Length: 61
Image (cartoon, rainbow, N blue to C red; front, side, top):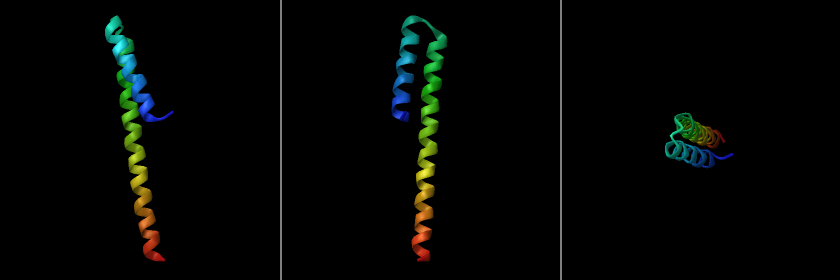
């Protein structure tokens, strides 16, 4: 599942928790959103690392 989908689902849980007064669901939604943001950061670092690696490969050739 994409991190955008996870963030959306987390936001829905958070809002539902607020509306219904379910603090556990609200917190779970916030946690899901934070996890999705962390995954996006990991993916971004991975992409940048690939870019750096590829630039070194081109320079060697």
